[in-house]
Length: 106
Image (cartoon, rainbow, N blue to C red; front, side):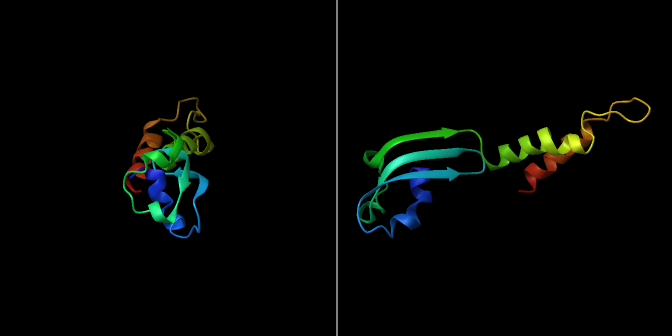
C-alpha cells in the first residue's frame, strides 16, 4: 500500500463520503505529500493507484532532519568547527561519534 495512504488509514475509516485529501506523511527518512481521494469503501483495497492524483516524496525526514539540526546548529554551539584557547582545532571525531550515537539509538 502507498505509504501516505497507509498513514491515513485510520482517518479514512471515519470519512462519511468520498473526499479529496492532502496527506502529509513525515517519516524517519522521507517526507511524502499525496493528493488523493479517500473513501471508507476503498480503505481496505491494496491497489489505490486510481485514487492518487499526485504524489511527491523527498529524502528529508526525521533522522535526516535530526542530523542536519545536530550538524548545522547544535554541534557548533558546543564547539564544532571551533578552536581551543591555544589555537588548535577541536577534533571533529567528537561530533562524528555523537552523530553515530543519535543515528543508532533511535
